[in-house]
Amino acid sequence: MADFSNYLNSNLTPGQAGAHLWVVIYILIIFAAVSLAVIAMNWLERKILAHMQVRLGPMRVGPHGLLQPIADALKLLIKEDIIPENADKLVFWMAPLVVVITAFTTYIVIPFGPTHAVTDMNIGILFMLGVASLGTLGIIMAGWASNSHYPLLGSLRSSAQMVSYEVAMGMAAVSAILMTSLRGTGVYGIGSPTADAIGTLSMIEIVRAQMNQHVWFVFKFFPLGLAAFGIFAIAMVAETNRAPFDLPEAESELTAGFHTEYSGFRWSLFFLAEYAAMIAVSSIAVTLWLGGWLRPFPHWLSGDAWDTAFSIFPAFTFFVLAGMALRTTVRMPKHPYFKIQKAGLGVFGLLLGGIGLVLLVPPVRDRVQDIYWFAIKVAAFMYLYIWYRGTFPRYRFDQLMRLGWKFMIPTGIGVLIATALVGVL
Image 1 (cartoon, rainbow, N blue to C red):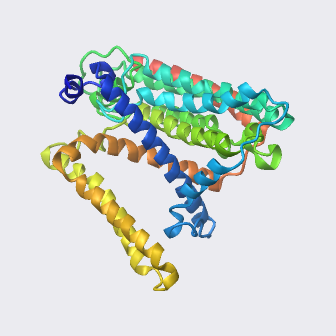
Image 2: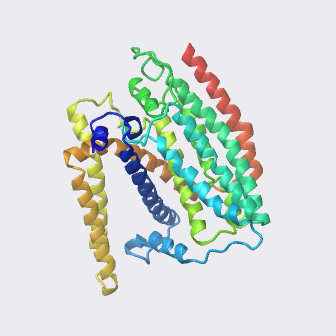
Image 3: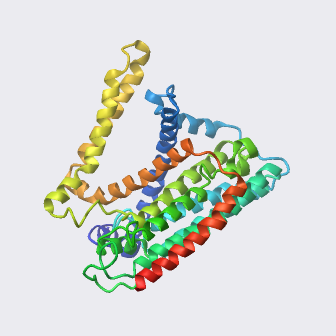
């Protein structure tokens, strides 16, 4: 019991406080939250792309197709699970597990708030980038173990792509790490100096450095911070094999690439890992350049009044969503066939409103603010993923590699050197 209360009364993460019970609780919450986010992302992606293309998207299962992801999950669970006859069965079985485990392991050091993380490592950013790169191993295993030409070709494309763009991603991340060693405040570091800063690889300390320097790193040394952020943003889309860099899974060319021979539950693990990786790399971008859990303008709009105003944003967001759901409920056709869907959407709207009321309770409101601002920033990146998919045509493989090796990497090195020079001068 002391282990349970020690963390609540501390300003440390569960791992730092030695609260092993809270470590387990956080891991379970993160696994459940990310899985729920993947379900929501699946529905949102299909609906948003449908609206972009003047379609309706999922509408049959549940009100406005809200239960469609659950129906898809049940279909995958009961679908026949086939292993090719000449496949390496052990490696074939292990590949999706490796991909999923590496995708979820990165969440150990993601700081959703100053104390809302499983633990904080002094090499946190290296840990995240290193573990994330191990996902390439699972993809190669899947392509090789299938004993088929198409998956093998898809896995080789994917490994070449991920390795190429990891270099540029690492260069951009080092640019942000260099900025943590500066003592001046403001965009160009010419304001009043802060306490001595010696640089850090800790994810939590990187966010605190942005707080102490009074600027998000995306605006630091403008336009160098913005350039580093842009390189990372492009590289993370390629790293997760998403459009327009989805060559490894190009259906028109490779019949879904490295996971062609997978079906049922094992295929769903690749799907889960892809979306979990998207959320993970978006979290890294938010932490390095967009202030992590910090709310907008914490220094310009400071004081108790502003803190109170920003603290009701989580509840206000759920009230808006509840209002949208209830408004749609009222506007649904008054026909017997819509009775169940109308009731379901109304209950869903009331549930969202209830969550909004809970978020107004002061202890809850104060505890979830950091998580809310972090989640909102990550959600913006997830929307951009959908937007890219509905907008840009797919790259050819030679264009993909040329962009990575001839533009991204040289630009990343140039931005890194320029950041170091400006920081020193």
